Amino acid sequence: MKTIYLDNNATTAVAPEVRDAMLPYLTDLYGNPSSMHTFGGQVGRAVEDAREKMAALLGAQPEEILFTSCGSESDNTAIWSALQTQPEKRRIITTRVEHPAILNVCQYWERQGYHVTYLGVDGKGRLDLDEYAEALSEDTALVSVMMANNEVGNIYPVQRMAEMAREKGVLFHTDAVQAVGKVPFRLSETAIDMLSLSGHKLHAPKGIGVLYIRKGVRFRPFLRGGHQERGRRAGTENVPYIIGMGEAARLAAENMEAERRDVARLRDRLESGLLKAVPDCMVNGDVENRLPNTSNIAFKNVEGEAILLMLDRLGICASSGSACTSGSLEPSHVLRAMGVPFNYAHGSVRLSLSRYTTEEEVDFVIAHMPDVIKTLRALSPFKD
Ligand code: PLP
Image 1 (cartoon, rainbow, N blue to C red):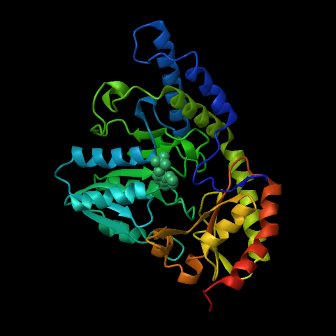
Image 2 (cartoon, rainbow, N blue to C red; image 1 turned 90 degrees about the vertical axis):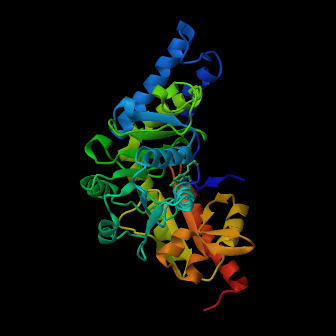
């Protein structure tokens, strides 16, 4: 059975170009980039070349790029550094729809005595900038707002929000794990101070991330030890993965415009096909302003997990908007924050595409979904 992979917000396939770029560094070129000898030195130059490619994708300077192990480490480090360098400031502002890599860290700092404001969202998952303006105070150590939401794909106005923070002298961090390569921006033209991203959402392997730190922003390392990464992150560099990340950044920069257009066209075909073929369903999120690859569809009166299991039998990979916690199916924190009605939130399925998704795959899903939903509705305990 062929796999139809529509779960690219969970992780992406490693691009063949990325794999090929990495292979020499897993075999012959195993030197330590910090070594004095030529053998290590050539590896060090390749790491710097990867840093330049990543900087070019982000519109940043190479020295503003710190390689980490994942998006979660980048998020943890950004918050840690902001709090450690400004001990007099005891407030954090974030949103109710962040990834756990931000939410759980904020909750940790809350338990350490920090005051955290969690900005709410409306029914489409949009933030209210007036509420944000009111919450912004000079004793805020950090604002952390995601550039794009992983579940519904909403894109948030982080450039405007970063300018508002700067006016108050407040540091601004964005978790751009889902946005990089899909949303064009140049960091040098924004007021964003720190940005997190993750390789495995960008066709690089799992286990490599980046934290951008604007030149001039004070920084305190999260991992201490050796002097790697200009003393900002200890630990011998994960060379093959850094090389892969550089190649993934080069590919993303080169193809972003065409990919955005092509992937959005397929996503729209999928979404409109499903809305037409299946009664009683709706799109979650802000359809005017969201990632080109993401569609989150709520099927009324069905359980999302059951939909996933039936799709899985057809070889279709997707994610649901609910998580099985302590035996009960709770809608996700994002759908709850949006106030999506219970009988829709439960049947919410996220379909996320990539540059490798084909029209045939999309049409296969459109052809099979009506039967899946019909079968499950007949069995469903939810009724109007
Ligand atoms: N932030 C967002 C928005 C994400 O979607 C994810 C992963 O799903 C992360 C952070 C965590 O990234 P990583 O898996 O690289 O730690």
